[in-house]
Every structure is written in structure tokens, then in C-alpha cells.
Length: 122
Image 1: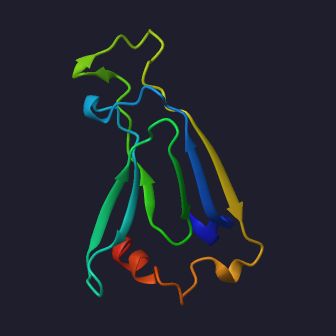
Image 2: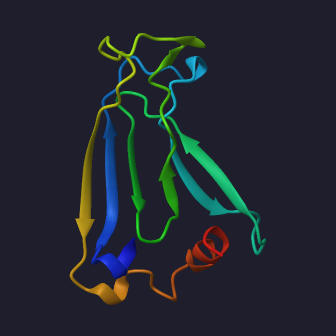
């Protein structure tokens, strides 16, 4: 991850294409952003964004620690589905990564988000 593997992504843009997504059904697949807590605090606030159809998310992928949570493709409403049937809970998204040619801007030590990386990845 990061420059160690020549990852120069700077900005991520995701457009979710899941018109039947239902968070209350437990569909999963949320994008989790790890953000700072209270001003000057040493805590992380987890923000989970559901992949609802039509939602667009943009964030600095080199600065904001993030992960995609597991989907629950084998369950609908707590009921185990037949794995041989096409899954109605597949996730679809159009993702665009904007890289940078100036690697000195990746994980910039002067970034306002610098403390997040230290808190999220001790």
C-alpha cells in the first residue's frame, strides 16, 4: 500500500450503481473513512458511507485512511441464500483514481490529515 508498491493515487472518486441497496437489510459493502475526533483529540471517528445507487464520494485517498467493509452476499434478511443462484446483492461502482506525478505530495508530512495516519496505523 502507498509508495512502497508504487501507488500514486491522490484522489478517489466513486459513483455507486446499486439502486436496490438496503442498509437495514444488512447488505454491507460500506466505505469506512477514518477521520479525526474532536479538535486536537487523539481519537478516530469512523464514518461508514453506504453504497447506495447514485451516491458519489470523493476523498484524498493518500490522506484519509479508509477501507471497504465486507458485503453480506450470502444473506438476505438474515436468511441464507442458495450460493448457486445469481446473487441479488452484488455491488457495482464506477471508480476513478487520480494519480499524481509528484510523489512528494503523497503522504505529505505537512498535511492536515497527518495525525490520522498515525492514529489509524500505529
